[in-house]
Length: 475
Image (cartoon, rainbow, N blue to C red; front, side, top):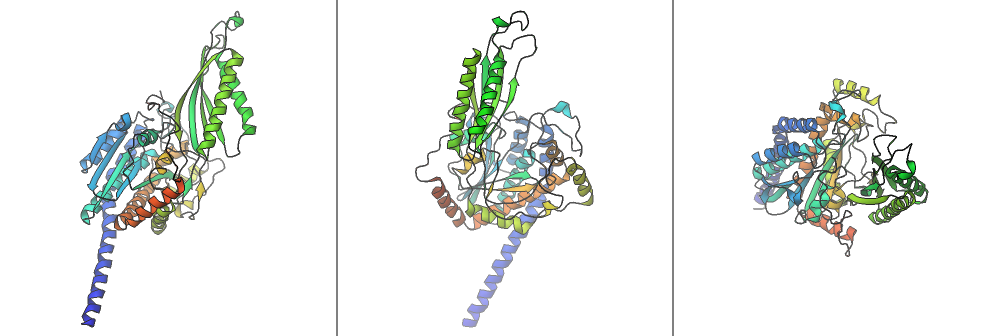
């Protein structure tokens, strides 16, 4: 009898290992089955290169594909025409994946390894969101099919989130409670190296400051005019002096978006667009108030009128070690990215154009060590991460050392180098989700960690207030 139990135990153990091994192979096969389709989608979105809140073709393409794959689609989320949710399955846990698809203005570029004029210098995917959106949708389809193949309970959800670049699309969705019933949120982002470390970011608030003056002939009647451009320049001067008296982790930057059209006409309309950043949102709010005071002072000194419109605001990223350790394990097991000889030659040509590159060719083959990291940029994923346990990975889709928001990032994102990173991201997301479905206690522990980190008195109040989504902010 004991011998029978022992042998039965061995047999059951062998069966469990075999089924688990099959599930692993099955997941890989599912990824491969959809590879050509989603690579094609990624390159189409790369070519569309639509800016924030204008991503109609990109959003429709993803919705159409996910609908074909059996997902239920909800559109026009939070009164944003290009925002949507795609869902499949039933029961818990609810695992969601974020997908972005907006491009940046003024950085159009072909896939050539040299800078060239392209599409009238229109928008380009200099942050790789074409890969981000397509990869997250690809992973969602794979996870759906894995749930079916393994008769596994659970819900997979894809969030199509527009206008990450300065538009804070996710913040409006968060404000509407769109993420409230999600147990775990996964995401990834293109980069020049790969890691799945717990990562923080800068909180951020932006606004457009408009000055109104009186136009007049700049030579024959200057006393009859009041320059709106003087208001902008005075504000900028005061903010630049303010930099000496802010916490050193702060970042403040601006661009003059209106400054007049003719030197001999005193400008009666001028505008400057400001970003204010710091790791702590409370500090961002205080710094932003000081920037507003500078604008008010500039208006008084130049006898112009000033108004401002808050454009967006993001929380810092809230890392979740419980989830990140799972994702990091998957990424380490999968390994980095190996270039072909042709890709290596391409990468060398790109690398020569980089100023002070932070990484070398070959670094894409390695996974960076697991440790707490801070990024000085900002993302609206931050708001989501304060509401839902969130984990993310950076995946090498660009030539090592490439900066985001550069023509080099646009170029590599349209090549096989970008597509190799795309597939690795899908593998990481799919493997991470699978483990959480098989062990829901991971989601439970991640929720406990988030509750500890945000504190019992946390009340989510968006930095952008109650304004409506700025659907025309890129016009």
